[in-house]
Amino acid sequence: MAKLLTKEEEEELRVGIEQGRYKKIFLSDKSFSDMSITELLVIIELARRENWEELDLRSKRITELPPEIGQLKKLKKLNLGEDRVADDKLRNKLTKLPDEIDQLTSLQTLDLSGNRLTILPESIGQLTSLQTLDLSSNQLTALPKSIGQLTNLQTLELSGNQLTALPNSIGQLIYLQELSIGYNLIELPESIGNLVNLKKLVLEKNKLSILPKSLRRLKNLREFWLAGNNLSSGFDWIGELKNLVTLSFGDNKICNLPDTISQLENLQILYFNENKIISIPSTISRLEKLKKLDLDGNPLNPALQSAYEQGQCH
Image 1 (cartoon, helix red, strand yellow):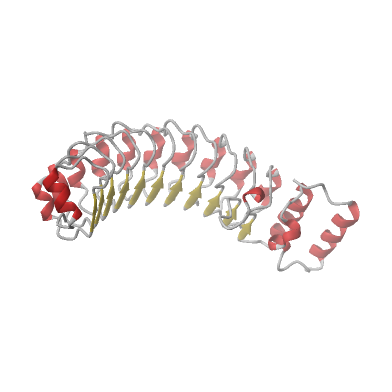
Image 2 (image 1 turned 135 degrees about the vertical axis):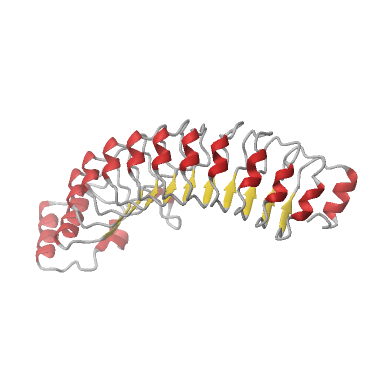
């Protein structure tokens, strides 16, 4: 963080708070893009007094979140994540969260993307009003078991960490609709099959060689992204996910498409590019809603290759 304010500057800000001069706070001002702990405390105090429901602290080079953040009882949205249009040099660099984070019991959205978090406190499980939690692009190696207490979560972003496993308690998030765990080195627990309201599941770039059969219970799934793993077989049950619209198995080690894919009557987009596929089952012609079939980068037999190049494959 930048150097602390002088006593005179701090007093001026506090007087400004008292007089209500900061209704449109200086958070977006370029002069505060390198925020000191004192400036952050002033903002928190202002938010507390005025019962703010939203606080946007993206791209402030914040390295530490003070325990006073727990005073914001009315806060519904807290953004400490990465601003994709801002200079990367302005990113926050949080490595941990204060235990007092558990006092933000009204919080519905928490964005911590693009920081340097290595661990989450167990107390995060107290944020039971959370609907969206973005932890992508951090350095997390594990999640606390208490993550399963966030039973109102609808969106959970975990991509781009260093996770090797998920706790079994992940299966308690029964209202989850979107789960992204791409770009980790993860193994999936069988309890993931309990997430029966999932509509989007992203498992790309995890070096997965086996998928738990419990995934067949995700009957509401519409998007399933599995590119960049080590899968070769073991997913004949895929045909049971009849609400799938998009299915991506690109860049794996698959030699044969399971016949059960023909049961995916709502499928519109199918990726099997960069695999080891020579032929495809004739039953794929039953996919009447299919708009895109990507078989690029496979050693297709000559007849199939010719048909594919001429657009005669579905």
